Image (cartoon, rainbow, N blue to C red; front, side, top):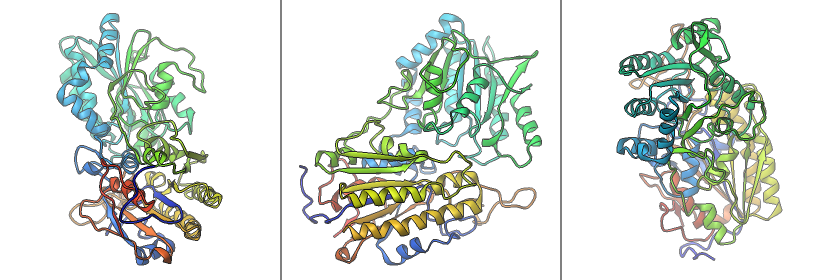
Amino acid sequence: MLSKYSEFPGISGPVVLIVMDGYGVSPIHAGNAIATANKPTLDHLFKTCPHTLLAAHGKAVGMPFDDDMGNSEVGHNAIGAGQIYAQGAALVAQAINSGTIWQGEGWREIIAQTNTHSATLHCIGLFSDGNVHSHIDHLKAILRQARLEGVTKARVHILLDGRDVPETSALDYLLPFEDFLTQLNCSGFDARIASGGGRQVITMDRYEADWSMVELGWRTHVLGEGEYFQNAAEAVQTLRDRHPGITDQNLPPFVIAERGEPLGRIQDGDAVVLFNFRGDRAIEISRALEGGDIPFCRLQMPAIAYAGMLQYDGDLFIPRRFLVPPPAIRNTLGEWLSRSGIRQFACSETQKFGHVTYFWNGNRSGKFAGETWQEIPSDSVPFEERPWMKAAEIADAMIAALHSGEYRFLRCNFANGDMVGHTGDFAAAQHAIEAVDLALSRLLPVVRQTGGISIITADHGNADEMYELDKKTGQPLLTLTGQPKGKTSHTLNPVPLILDFGAEYRHLGLKQMENAGLANLAATVANLLGLEKHPSWHESLLQT
């Protein structure tokens, strides 16, 4: 049993932590689907309950710079760990700046493969500087180093973003990158873009929600199947003209060809690097490229050396070869509570299930003793068509778990604000927030009835800024047709922290700390349960 918290004996009922994914707090109403949504439950909570704001981006969640957006992975790492670890982008940047990435076993094996077989180095990944899944500078560093180490041929397979960066910004990255390749292509080095497509169409599925995306990516990158174009800029412009209003993330796949043949098929003896550092949308394509068991026929499996930028799942060893070791996250909240014999329940729908389990537990796939996980299968339809997603079913599962009386700590994630926010559909995002509000109106009273306390928070913003805003005026930027320019990426806004409880706990409150962030939540949960925090955690925000 862990030591008791000296200042508070703990509540009699359960502690329930609710993550409203993509729910930031902004004073600007223009383009703010949260501010304009009909949300009586949340409005009442902000008026009557102790609340504060938490940082959920930048250095507060382990990113390199304070103008780096947070995301669900680093957010749930920070919440579940109670500590700040250097995360994907920072890890990779540190490894590149120090040069340790090039001395690592993963890179040495990639170079040995290409140079021994006089083969091609293929680089696949999200093509932007969004710094959520990848960064284009990391790709450039790989290509520079490859040329220095004697690689003669490289092919780049680009996944267009328009989600973590402006929605139609592909050419802003493509044209300068082509200039970069022109300057790099000397002394016998030949690097070119070989294929591409929108990130929501090919390759980057997650949580096995739509393996057909991965199959289409496989056929595009590996087999060179798809519509042929002379270059990537021509492909993007042609596809935009053909599909008016389409955003980059939804562009169809394309293949760059020369003399009627794809110039970048992945073949026996080649080496492939997936330069994404974030894990959720990298695992399935990694399984496909490593030759693992997957639900589609690969037709042919070239004998290649494959490496991920990071190891995306340390428990399942996916991938087996990687360039930068992941952070070793230890002493998480889940592990701390498990040691004390506290039974825990985690629930979300498929889209965010890994966040309340794998990422929450410090990038571990396995459960700690006393943990129960429940996944609600997500719908396989565009999120804007069903913005309520599975909020009702998650509330059902949480209420049933509360009534069981088995759990002292429960956690869930409502994915609506983030997943629908990423579509850029303002009206749908409003409905998404309203669906979460309705779910809270059902769930919170049950927590109070069981003598518990609810902690309502978020992992990052999204639906709070559905339009690109002028940084000086705060007003929406406009397209050429005079319409507000949609924003599909996360925001830099803080997120809420609200305590909801019955009259028996009215003496409790929240400290108003200037630098409070998501990592303060683990200690807050432990203290509400009557336990001391782990010494490595950030301070509790509980005021007794």
